[in-house]
Image (cartoon, rainbow, N blue to C red; front, side, top):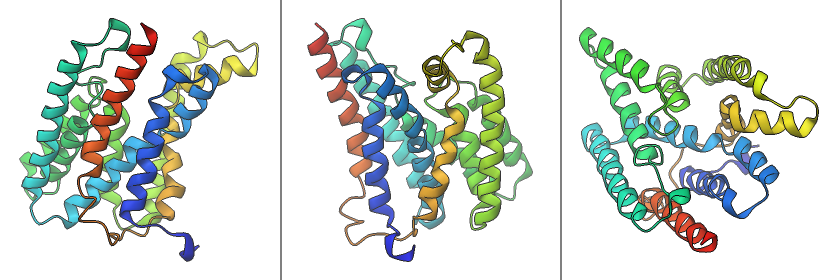
Amino acid sequence: MQKIKYNRETFKIILMLLMVLDHIPYFISPYLADAFHIITRVVAVGFGYLVIEGLRYTHSKRDYLIRLTDWGVFMGIGNFIMNQFLSQEYQMSILGDNIFITLALGAAIVMLWNTDNRRNKYIAFALLLIGCIPVLEGSFVLLPFMFITNLTYGNVKQRDLSYLGLAVFFGILELSMSFSAMDTSNFVGVFDGIAMNASSMFFVLIVPLLHLYNGQQGKNGKQLKYLFYVFYPAHLWIIHLVANYLGN
């Protein structure tokens, strides 16, 4: 197992490749899109894990938070500009297609919680609850995940069990809310219903990926530092432009 462990940069590249699979439903069959939607639930939480890790090793937590926020603002502006060239079907949400903002909020919550100030902890918990309202991209799953990751960092067994507990919670919640709308007469209907309406629990697939991650920076770490920051908005904008062109 030790021989197949990968470093931080390889982990990011794996997550980015999976990210692409989640954003190409315009070009593939609905059933393949369903399968990709399930396995790619690991992407947001994977980057959430890396943000928590980054907060522990960065020289300046403040600069780290500002960088995430700046890229979130940049992407929000970019999404708005892109929408001027896209038909309604292919337009992007300013906040709903912008994981930088969710990651920045998660980082802020963790930074406040990790202080010795009780008032800051109350503010952090309030932001966590408010942030779980599904307005920001992936916040419903990502913010609790980042909070748990921060609390259990360094204790692998406790981390994995906490993730499992969160996945069970999402499974019960989403399945109970969506079961009545599912076509339960066949497997395909159930699979489609789960993939589209009750897939949050599959974030737990991040666990085996984390067990293969060695937590070390690769030899090209400094050169690839901003790869995700550039790749994330660029690939989304390209996909939406191409889908808009093909669909018109």
